[in-house]
Amino acid sequence: MTLHCSMNPLRNPFEEKLFPFWQTLSRYFSPARGLLAFAVGLNLVCGLAITAMNALPKFLTDNILLADYSGGQKLRESALLMAAYLVIAIFGRILCWHLSMRLFTRASTRALAKIRTLFFNHVHFLCLRFHQQKQSGELLSYLFGSPLAGLQQFLSQFVLMVPFTVFTLLSTLALVFTWNPVMAAILFCALLFTGWTARGATSRVNQLNYAYQHLESSVSGRTSELLRGQKVVKMLAAESMVVERFRQDAESIGDKNYEVQVKSHLESVKAEVMQITAYVVLAVAGTGLFVRGELTVGELVAILASYAAIQPLVGLLFQCALMQGVAHAGLNRIESILSHRTSTPMTQAPRQELPANPDIVMEGVVFSYEDVSVLQGVDLTVPYGQKVALVGPSGSGKSTIVSLLLRLYDPVEGKITLGGVDLKDLDLTTVRRQFGVVPQDTFLFNGSVKENIQLANPEASESQVIEALQRANAWEFVSELPAGIESVLGEGGASLSGGQRQRIGIARALAQQPRVFIFDEATSALDTAAERVITETLTEVLSDHTAFIVAHRLSTIRFCDRVVVFDKGRIVQDGPYEELASRDGAFRDLLLAQQLTPGRPTL
Image (tube, helix red, strand yellow):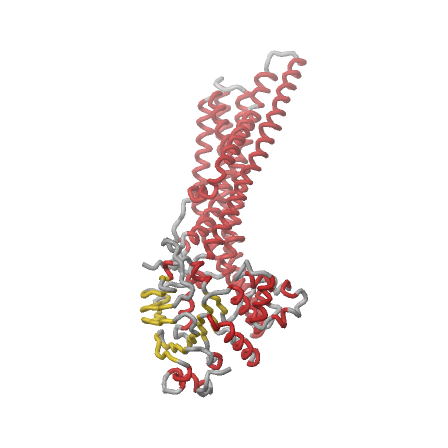
């Protein structure tokens, strides 16, 4: 059964599966379990140190200031207490906190790098359906935009504050309990109610964060597309319209961000009111217990000082809870991509060897895209070494045949075999390495000529690169570039003409040394003279290879052994160029439409 990508670009983000935050995150932190355990231990020491520091007023007041000591002894006792305080603060509080922060940060940065790498790897192996529904700018925002940025900010805050804050709260409650269980209960209830309030606030803000990130990703994708399409924008004099569209998008993001910030701050204000109220309750209750003789002055002062000290920590926990909502939204969006399964799954079958000269056979191939029928029962056998031209009106299924051969898609019905082996039973890399492809618009990366050609064959030597350029009739202009094959081509090969880019693409296919060549309108960007030169080159290069030539310009396929004519997803004619051109039918109609006449297959 064929798997299909389940991505729907119009789908409401709230309808997506919600992945458990901590369980999901723990997968990425699992290699650093030992490191994290040590960091937590340091945080425990840090929390205990803060509790001891907060207890200072009790011992200073009850055991020194109100004790029946002489002035000199009080000074000595006070100095010893301050020395102990200094040691605890520097070594227990500051040093342990810094070391734990370093360990936590190391673990979190590695986890983020792992997420980025897994995401980038997974997206590259997803089906073409997915990439047709997701803009590249949107996918880029997943890697370096708000989804991972929110997670990174949360982890930074979490590793710095949360563990030692929790230990501080627990140890403070335990210490206060030894002084007075009633005060400990009141303090516990105050902290519990604050936490309950934070949980409700987090749930409300999370919905806003999901909506904001969904909007930002969409705008990022559209903006990236507009920036890449600058040439078309200028040719159409559409700058004003594009700027206005971006202004509207920017305002939408601004309005949504304003809503998130205001409502998040409102929840923070609610939490602060709760903290102030809890402080008042503690002070009143403590005063009552002191009057009844159940609490000393030092204990009351220490409890109030401790709560005042941990109050900002509670606020940080609340902020961290809100940040977790942002992080969860971002991580969930990333996991939603990672959970997608390709419609061309990797085979689990044992690796199979292909014959040296494999035939290609299509049997009853049916294919549809988004419920639109594209191919209907195609049967096609291509012996090794045959040059086959695929022609027909636009949308007749020619390019779909190429996509199926490369396993960019799998047939809905039927099968395609290479050397007698079903493509589904071959590793994807094995399949695609059999084909050297030159598309209609060759994409070149922002690297050197050499790097772009070695992309198809990393093992190609410099001499092999030059040979491929010569065979593609590209060496003449490449040799004149400032740095030759080391010359950087710019983004998308912007420094070259369309014809030059296409020749580099042909050289890249030649360097791959495939068994089968696919030329999808490969000469459409060339002028007549250059097209003739390239066609002559292809005739020589393809002499002992199978080749598929998808063409609209029928003058470029005269050298082919065979012409297969498609119409509405079916093969309507199949035979030699001269034979099809000499009789009535779809091919002759195409020739007449281009004002061509039948002739001998010469160049």
